[in-house]
Image (cartoon, rainbow, N blue to C red; front, side, top):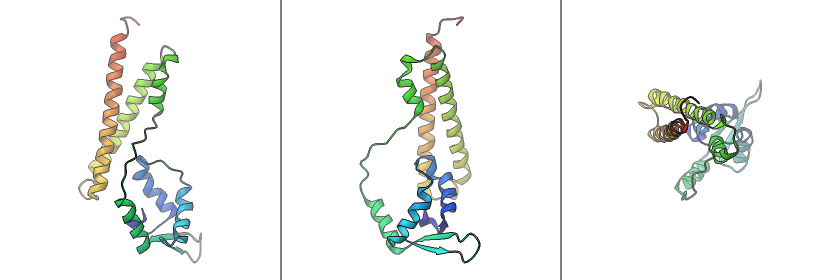
Length: 167
């Protein structure tokens, strides 16, 4: 994130919340601890305010840019990690109560729809002038959310087809 420009840990928290925080979960404490560690390693510089809250502003160094370049060039064979509470509940749905499954399906469909709509609104807002690779990552986010929304919609339809009339 600092390759985009200098920032305090609070600034990083704000940047992350609206960007990679949508698809890469991590503890916000890392945004306060990690910059100091990277500065000690020579990958960032830290400049402290003279007065006031004495906030530290971090900036990437040439060594930091080289480390970023090395990281980007390294292979990424890992599988995508899925941590979806709705999917976990669906797996154990055999043990659910009679109304639990339809509620789960409707809630998850609506949740993914809202997220996809939010991504789409952001896409519409930034696509004309944003970094093209950030826009591509947003496109994938939209597709993933729409696909999962479609799954739950089809699942709701199959539940409705199984439910006898009058129930």
